[in-house]
Image 1 (tube, helix red, strand yellow):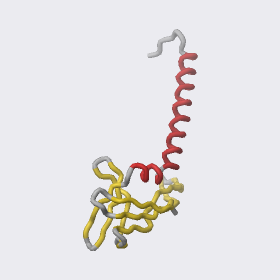
Image 2 (cartoon, rainbow, N blue to C red):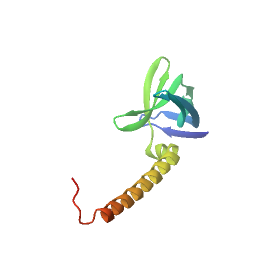
Image 3 (cartoon, helix red, strand yellow):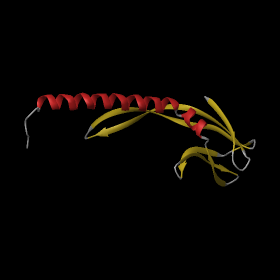
Image 4 (spheres, one colour):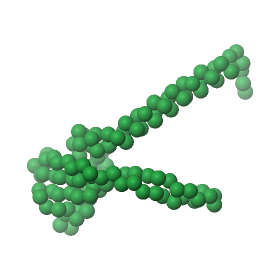
Length: 124
């Protein structure tokens, strides 16, 4: 579990505790059942100016990552600072970058192979 704190533009002190939660989704595809493992980041605890919020979750607002929360029956948004957002999802972003690099490499190999096979030929 990781803990992050920051002060909003309006001077509110926000503290969140985040953990990675893994779970399994059961799917059925044309009668063939299978399990798909997934993981996500969840906010396990959040305080706003020292007061515990009733509920909170990650969300997006106008292209920014934020925390949507409920406190005292009212909903609010707290924008995540860029450095905190990057820290929370660093592992996932690194894995995505590695997967993209592997896909680009495979695509380049495929194009090279197709050029080799089709050198001088026209296919319709």
